[in-house]
Image 1: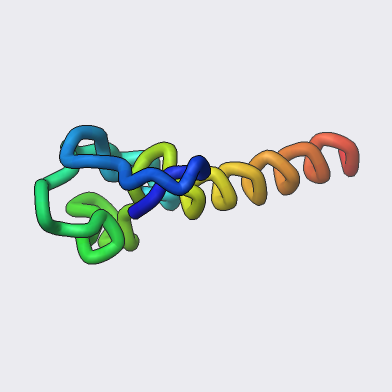
Image 2: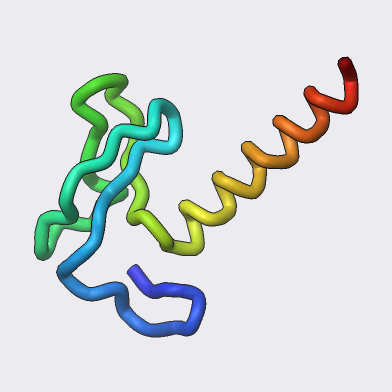
Amino acid sequence: MKNPDGERMGPKGNCICPKCGYTQPHRRGVPCQEERCPKCNGKMLRQGSEHHRKVEQVKAKRKAKTETDK
């Protein structure tokens, strides 16, 4: 996985579940997207990756819309 600067993310870091927020240490050689969350069985994402940021942006937009609809 590459970060937004186009550099590989390296062996350190965490995998995070976008559904429930569970985090676990990244296992070297195993992409986070191949991991499943042990709590909700969702697909994990690499924390800080482009995919993770996009999910967070969508969540923020939904939250903002929900707050304006009240």
